[in-house]
Length: 325
Image (cartoon, rainbow, N blue to C red; front, side, top):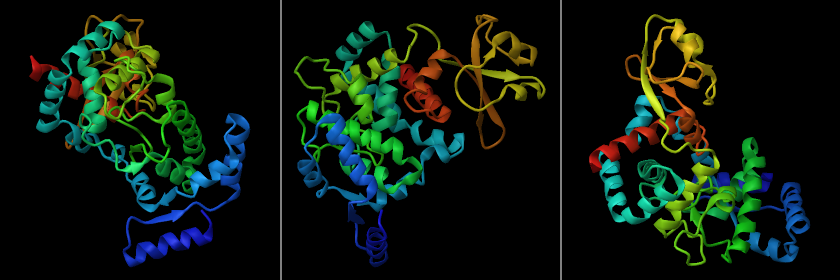
């Protein structure tokens, strides 16, 4: 963002004009992006520059990036998703889409409750799919948020390509402040890689077609090696403090069951001693909960790398399934 643009954003903020927006300035970064799109994907430079004249840098998007929900401790994060409204909403979404969920589960091997919980956590079953134009969100974070500009410029590239592929006006699709789209909140690269046209109408519509959204989530999981019928996670307990040696960063299974048992972690007897698992600690108001993440738990984290997110999805899925039956 140029000094002129920054000043405009600051001035609008101070006088209370909202939403706070500013035009994209022709910086070196922007010019390099346009050049890349014309060379790599054969976009017309004049048309592309004209398109971006209608795109805005939005200060509320930058503000939202500084306050992610994953920054909360587990006992606060869990309260966002494990609510009566979200559980009941999941049961209703399941009932409304029962035939599709049954067909998708049969075809892909991903449990209906996991798919429903993902959509429930992401958008409350399609009720909150985002209030920002996707192109504004991606351009704001690509050109005006240096910590992650490389990632979001790649997603902006993917978005422009998918808009051309899907015959969409790139100024129309709406999404989250991070540019995530539709019922399942796919980023553009995920849309291009995993979105499905489940009802065969020739469109991959994850904004208004639950069938396409449901199949797209299942396909995402399958492509990330979901193991049909395998467990996701187990609550565990431990004696003493030796287990703390096994707590480490990341979410990928990294320790053997036999080794955890030696550290006095009490594990389900059906787990093989050679199986790799992940010991996870979740902060409560008093103390902590210990959980064992298995391979399918790791697959959930491919959707969002936070172990808080994956546990919220899992626990919500279990609550929905229990309520439904």
